Image 1: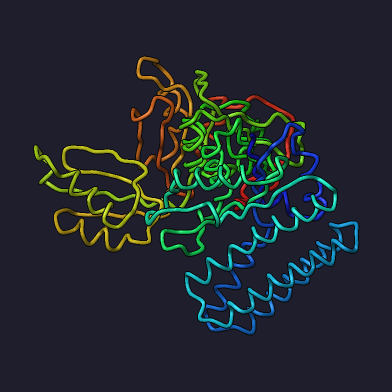
Image 2: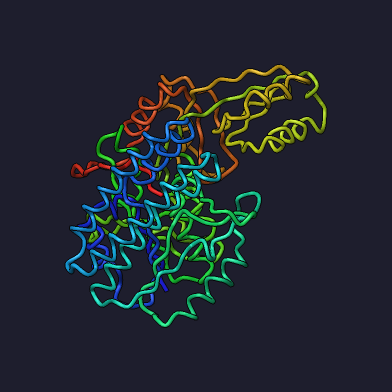
Length: 454
């Protein structure tokens, strides 16, 4: 069985929802994972925030606007009046539920419930379309099988057991439809896998059912070898290893949720990135194959905070780094980059929510400096220690760029650099120009490159 995930722009209009039918392979069964229609999750976040701020009437007006927009979608999506009546009845019930939640005191729990409605709407509308077309299909509710633990990690054995049981119990062995993004947490409440989480859902499902392949359909033709928003003449990459794709996704390539790779890598399930706007384009294949190329791709991750920790206690001492990392563990803040010397440690984080608490704890035994608004530049390629010359090329290319940190040697396929955020574009362009990262190609559309769908 293949798993196909379609993002928000792929289900963004009635026309695109109808197009999905032509993209589903003929060799079934197949699992289809859908995001919310483009703009829906953002609208629900706004509604939740406004309601939480005590402006219930304004939030209700926004709900009415959404309800009207969905009525236009159902009018265009279906051919028969009977199906339109079913769809309008369903959407009316959903928006009534949303309005009922807004009468409560809207907190985190209620916001999570509200956000789940985006995927519930898209999957049910697509299911009704398949019914109208006479195509065998089964709608599976993600909250019935997708569970996460207290740390937000998927409970894989439970997901696999429940999902495979539901698939076997279905009378249809054609198309299975389910929601991306949404799940239940350790307390049994409706929760989600965070923004971009539909990719992750597809990967988790792929792992759980031992899928033949996981396809991620978005609105760009695979990974590009640099950011086309800032660099001209980028080109798609046709193949990446699991490790290379994970590095690029984590360090800023928006096309793929960073957590997607791991569940597929565990069972060696290929991941194929495809473009719904150009389905004939081969996209990017991610698998276990590694091909040695000096510089394969570059990605950038903004909103990084660099922390320098200085202490004479480091000199000839053991246990210092443990004390440092215990603090980050206590405040559940992951570290991205790290460099050390005899008297100082520099590291980076991408979540500064607990920065004040972290700095306070570190200052008990060290001097701490924190610099915000930094950018990590991730350069993926062939950087084995025995291969001379590649690192020198990179540093020569960036001789006019102030480098805050350099991480090299932790991986044979990645060099990470830290620069000020205002230096990001110049850094990407310098790498592109001096190292000839890309070859001149015909101009390609980059619309939606930055968009992260659920």
